[in-house]
Image (cartoon, rainbow, N blue to C red; front, side, top):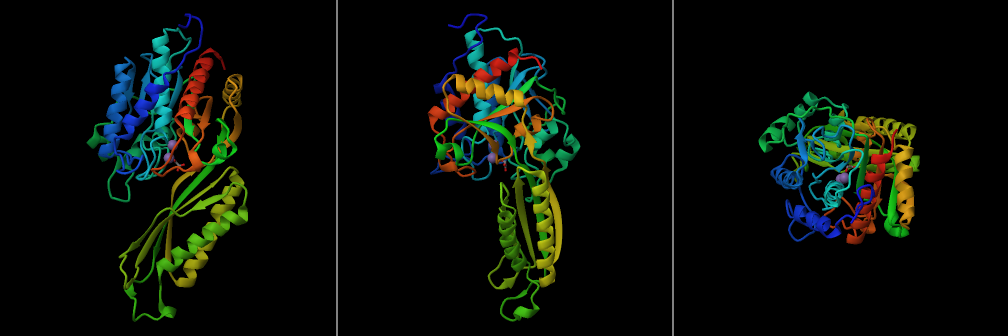
Length: 417
Ligand code: GLV
Ligand code: MN
Ligand code: MN
């Protein structure tokens, strides 16, 4: 039993694991461990309802803002001045059960364990889940946390239309998560996000904790390539205006750009749709996305310039029209050295193996870093697999990471900036 002034708390690992498993039943992809809970779908709504019930059962003050971000706090003032944990519970269409969900349920566990221990902290604790972190259904990614920190207006969020023609505001109303709490939201004292690494480094090097120093920059663009639809049998190759040929060469160009720039540069074409998409018809239109990321802003800009030049050249050669639209653009983010140092020190005190590292994936923490001192804790992902239903993290690592989150949050209640 902790003394009233002994700021340490033991989290309940079993309870954490049970909640992760229960939330994963919602939107479960049959025959896998994974989930499909795209933002603002019925499954997302069901997941939200479950987590909000858990928050309310703890007697927390729960607020929902105009873009559907949910904050639960031990204090009636919400996030203001609190040490806050959080992440997201939406998933990509073929997602795992840990991405985002871990950070939310770990934050909830830290609060429950702290309340049960009956210790008095100098500051409130809060946990949030932000809307549409994945951005798979509606760009940009980190949409909810971006709005929370004032980087995108509520009006702009509500107007975003997805490729399926649905609109964020209408979907939020439909699932009953357009709330009335202020957005932008209050600045917490500090923000800490526990997340699975989603890459192979910790697993391969057999390290327990990733101490995240920052997040790489992200550039998403959508290219709409318009050519001339025609008969596949009668149109000579020299007379074709084929957007698919352009798309195929852009895929190859994106990979070459990544290898030419080197370092942390990555490039991905994750979506390609053809119209009319028929075996014997040269397509009229190809719509594709390109995701470019780099830790270094000038290099990311170079990748963007290179992509633009090569797309233009390939399209000109095929006499295909190109329209380009930015879906998301975020510069690399460096986390607060004091929070990073605190996480590292606490992990080392516990005898955990640690590695300072950047994050390849985007996270809500990179938005929260705009309004308060912020850091992230990574735990290993088996074989580095994520955004895939087979995503897996050893239960012991989930528990170890959550205990470190508890230690960090409690230590940060004592720190004055
Ligand atoms: C968000 O999960 C991203 O990094 O794409
Ligand atoms: Mn995530
Ligand atoms: Mn993700």
